[in-house]
Image (tube, rainbow, N blue to C red; front, side, top):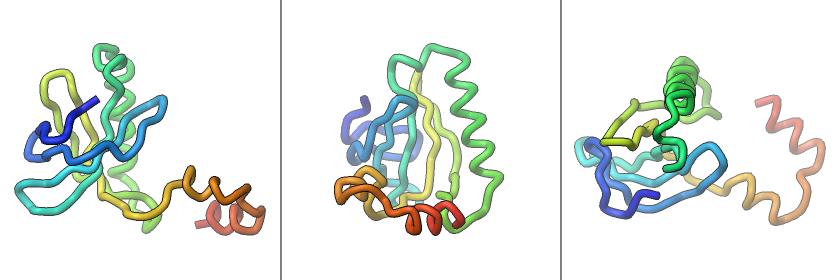
Length: 116
């Protein structure tokens, strides 16, 4: 887990946004362009696994090849020692987990979202 104030290239970690089985996502400040971004990094347990590192890089390449309003833009890849991260557009708003706290998603809403 990265700590607030840690740097990854020109990005300074501000706070942990979320954590899952395949990564941790942090809010960070781009100190060159003065904007907030999201950084997805592998959990520490996976940083020495070549297959996981390649998968992270492949994910970055695939996302960078897409251009859609519902997909965060990829700004790049950064590395600092054993930490590698995908630098992403920061999208503000509730998460799916936040939405599910209000109950199941109705089929109509799920279909509208999926069609987008």
